Amino acid sequence: MARRYAYGLIGAVVSAGAPLGLLVLRRLQHPTTSRSLELAAKEVAADPVGYAYVGISTCVAFSTFGFLIGRQADLLAELSESDGLTGLRNARGFSSRLEDEISRFDRYHEPLALLFLDLDGLKWINDRFGHRTGDLALRHVANSIRAELRRTDTGARWGGDEFAILAPNTSATAAIALAERVRSLVARQNLPWQPTASIGVAAVDVTSSDERIDSATLMYRADAALYEAKRQGGNMVTIQPSTGICVRQPATPSISLGSTEPTVTPHARSDSASRPATDGGAALDARSV
Image 1 (cartoon, rainbow, N blue to C red):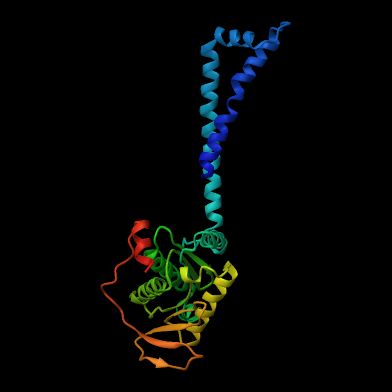
Image 2 (image 1 turned 180 degrees about the vertical axis):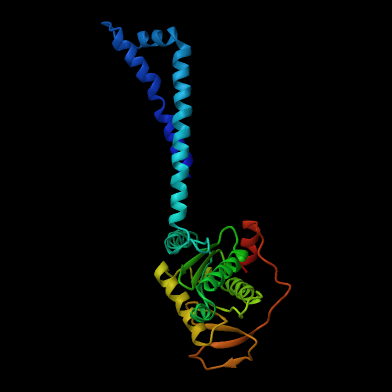
């Protein structure tokens, strides 16, 4: 429950003390030897309008006051977990959501994917065009990520030029497709330079549900896949499931580097690929291919 509603409810409950306090005060002003509930009921019956007014007005005032305080608390909590430049979650907010999804995976064994994205050449952009242009590039990446998020997904700026996407109920195949769409959106913009992004994907699927997974392990796999994408020259998507690394790169011939090395495959851009549905349920079914 949001703090604004919880605090408003607490205020309404606390306000019940106002008519009770009035009753106690009047009993103290007219003391009697009897302290029975019957006399208290007679006291209330003697002035029902006064007690009703005190109870209702205090309830409205306290609940409104609690709602306003709770709304500010919600705003502060949101700001503490949001990145001021891009509007996505920051590392703190993303880590909290990641732990929740890991717990959900342990319980239901549904597919889970983590994507790490790095904006290629941010230092060069800052040096060549200035830091304000670098901030524009970061916001452009954030908008590309946001355009492909479902309601159940979480996008974040992990720090510097690195971003993260958490996609629950998303298989490895669907996670690669998501990463390719984001990478394509980043490169599609008409800017003074050609923006590109490298993306590393880590996925745990139903077939590996017997494996114990934690946030550190999943992040390590995504980070390793991202490192491999950068090592291969950037502007590509790599995935590291528990079995190894497979690399997808745009506009390059197929290359086989042996069993111990990644496999590079050509990227075929599909204009028919549509953005994910905004409806959470429909999109979930489409991703869990």
